[in-house]
Length: 143
Length: 143
DNA sequence: TTATTAAATTATAATTGTTATAAATAGTTT
DNA sequence: AAACTATTTATAACAATTATAATTTAATAA
Image (cartoon, rainbow over all chains, first blue to last red; front, side):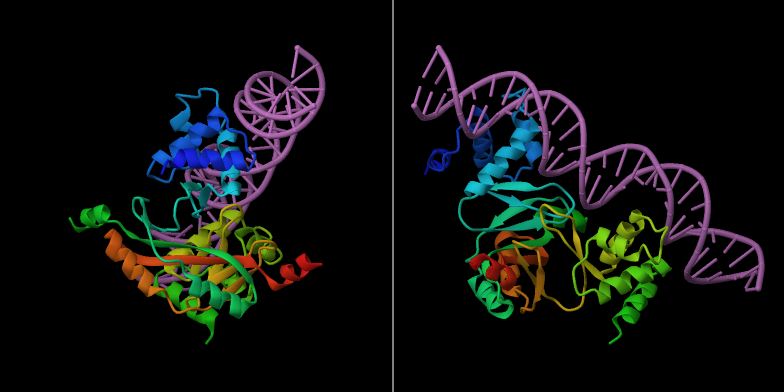
């Protein structure tokens, strides 16, 4: 239930020190329903941590990713976005305003199996994003 | 049949000038079975075009993308890779050596439909990549 | 064919996201 | 408390990409 507590436990289990900065970054990731960039996190926390370095944000996001708490979403042009891992879900992205909406779908195991069979790869995972126009932007277009 | 000719026709139709540089970049994209980065293209053509600027490569790849001739593959860390669009296919990527293998699969229309229904987005397209270990790297691991 | 004109190329500088480095700081363990 | 290690900070470096302005060139019509 308490995601932050669970996350902190995960860190403790894996021997990652819990620093105030890490605590705050995790908290921010969990509470923000968006998918913030490293810079957004940095800016959001500079009130609480005026001396925190951008490197700290990047370092810790990498740590969280390695531990499996956070997923990095990489689109082409802009900077990476970070997503606190809860359940397995995909993202639907608006090509006009960049809004990202979560979208649950049973994992595409079938595709992984076929890919593995055809290519001989040992398949670990996959990524998928869906692109389109969000309702807000659709509305604007019409007028 | 002749992909290069078709591509040049597409450019003509859309009013995009056919310059020697564009011709060469397209030719390289079509002939290379790999998925080159902008820099790889730049280096590959510097024999033929010693004065060509990197900007030219980037500019033209953008033009090709806008016209639909080329698809940009964006992974997180490294630079974008470019894929001459032939038929609809996905990519299987080796997490160890970075090798990219094409993989045909009937489009996941079903997922797009569901996403559209759930989120209210007007869905245009999607991307999917599959990650794993290629046979070569699997072999090396064992020893 | 040549003259015209808008588009493309070039060279360069600037920008941006991210990572590397080294010194300072803060937890942990003995 | 001392010693050790992980973490943070500040800064510099890097690499991919884009912006700019001057120059050149492709397409087209006289």
